[in-house]
Amino acid sequence: MSEARQVDVVVLGLGVGGEEVAGRLAAAGLSVVGVEHNLVGGECPYWGCIPTKIMVRAGSALAEARRIPGLAGAATVEPDWAPVAKRIRDEATDDWNDKVAVDRFTSKGGSFVRGTATITGPGRVRVGDQEFEASKGLVVATGTAAVIPPIDGLAGTPYWTNRDAVEAATLPGSLLILGGGAIGTEFAQAFARFGVQVTIIEGSERLLAMEEPESSEVAASVLAADGVIVKTGVRAGSVAYDNGFTVTLSDGSVVTGDKLLVATGRSARLRDLGLETVGLEPSARFLTTDDRMGVAPGIWAVGDVTGNGAFTHMAMYEADIAVRDILGQGGPGADYRARPRVTFLDPEIGAVGLTEKQARDQGLDVRVGYVPLSGTSRGFIHGPGNEGFIKVIAAGDVLVGATTAGPAGGEMIGALSVAVHAAVPIATLNSTIWAYPTFHRGIGSALADLG
Picture 1 (cartoon, rainbow, N blue to C red):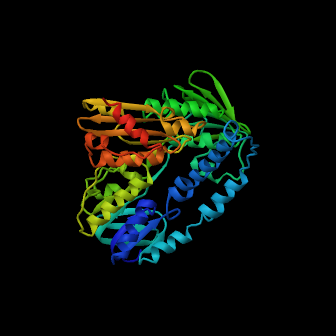
Picture 2 (cartoon, rainbow, N blue to C red):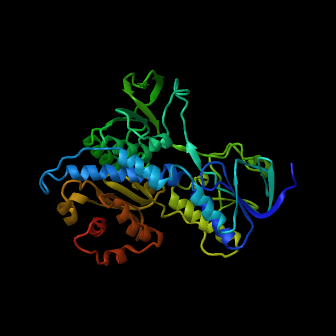
Picture 3 (cartoon, rainbow, N blue to C red):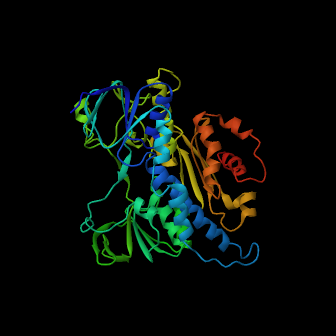
């Protein structure tokens, strides 16, 4: 092996967070090596946020056309997956080619290495037959991979993960989905609107189990309206495959489908990184960071591997903090009180901060305000497709959490994210002028319901 190349920083993983760190440090004049074994940009642009929301948008267009009767006349809708698959392949992912992203990074002065990185000691990384020694340190941004549960008979079958579902050029007649979280429910609704018979199998007692119960109720209702069969409180006991999938559930019932999508969560890619050589536990679920994204002396972590929310916006947020710390620029540290998230169903379900249960479990003196979206002026105007609600969680004189479900749920949460993050007094929020007739005016109604 050749002598280690001396650099300032090595970034392990060039997903959203890693690419941001590596690019900004290189642009700032540091000697940066970015290592990626797959595609630069990571899950989001190729198999996550971007292509899945193209699918959601297409399905929502079909649903909106089906709402024309009773609103604006008549419509005939003929679903066709081909333009969706083409847009994902040609426009969103360049047929899963990352040349543009690689060039974007190297144009900033960074050095790109394709391969799998292994930490061999403090500041030292090996990629194939190359070795690098980083004087300032390492940034771990290796992301997550789909969790494949140890279900009897599952291994060896042609099951789908989110990547296979996104890359599908044609759709199956029927689809079984293991997991009723954000990923499972978004795929379920999008595919169902294109005529696929979808069944969701969720072990918890409700869909979107980490969100408010009201969110679960809305999700279950709209999915049922799209023809999705939802089975909660049961798990897959065994899987058999013979030109189609047969899943025996924990209650003894059996479900069948042409394809099986596993959407049971994601786990950080930490094994085989060599973390033990720098005193870290390779079997850890996540890397625990301080408020400057530090994991250990000379090691930072950003994105999904930190366990602070597997969202692109969280990776970018953490990347900014790590960059400022490495460059000695100071500024605010990590503050996760106002983590926003959106489940891109129709209706969108936006949320920020604590749920009511989480707030009560923390022993906070909780007050809750709630308004159904259909009870607001804009909800009434919108008519079909106006399912949703606004719920705010207060403790003391500030909000600690909120949920906005509706046609613009992902946009409405923005105002409440600011309120939670900045600890805006409720009295100030109550004196806000909310434009009429907008969906977000319902925030004022929910605040009034706090009493």
